[in-house]
Image (spheres, helix red, strand yellow):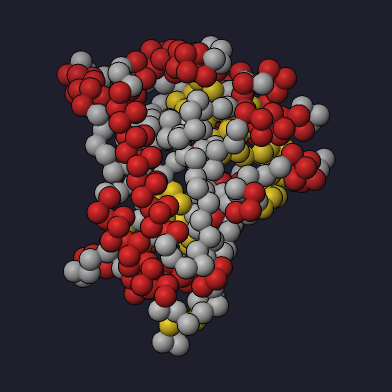
Length: 397
């Protein structure tokens, strides 16, 4: 009898990818589905970045790169960190990978093993808890509801820490909520962490530039915990480059070296062409970033107003990313033609099958009363989608 490894058997399939696949299946049958489940910009990669990739092909960047990435790209990243974030790193502290997802996984696989605990604030991105399982660690979930803007407090953090705590995963701006930690809120968390010098903070900042409150704040800015922080970032969200698969870490030297060693054994360096494109993204004009951010900001305001028009839907106003994460608890437990909605995953499937709007139930994000809607689509799609959502929700009884 063939049998999968325990490692794989412990993993759950990605709910976000599953909903996207289900949406595509309905579309293939001729059903008009509006997809608000996908976590990627709907813009094309800017022309100057595409040109750099074409030039890289012509210049024969077709050989293996160094495992952590070309020195020129690592240098561009250190300059970005200095100029935009006032953070000083050397190129040896940068490791480029096949997307920020691999970057997070590299860090966890490098520092986590059986018996280690990882604090994961909920709502969380679906893959964090699965990566911790993959590394053999134990997830310690700390829940923060809509009443606290989905952000954990210093007191909650301190309560969750045990002698086995090895890491904290912090995502700001957040997927799935769009919440953004302020400098003061991060300082409060840092005041706790400075007392536990063996805890590593994995700071996922992939949505850094999709931020509607001004300057991005990184927890790495605090010198007293700098050596405990690994920044994870990349080009996918800010530059509409999801398919290019280029992420990176800026880390204490010992962690960067560990990730370099690990990556050298199972993927080696990321795509040479994607690296040259990413270098152009960081060194070229940043006008494209502002144009996309302004569009997302406008769409956020639009979808918030539309969502607030739906009775009993609790909506927090996100300060970043391109998601809303309303509390739909008023509709949990209701039914439609004998079909009972037991939790948010059921609700998301109902909205897809009856309302023809794809979303992702909050159960996958550790928030069973919420549903994630992405507004990375056109204004027209948003207006029609929320009209359908409202009709479908009001049909429940």
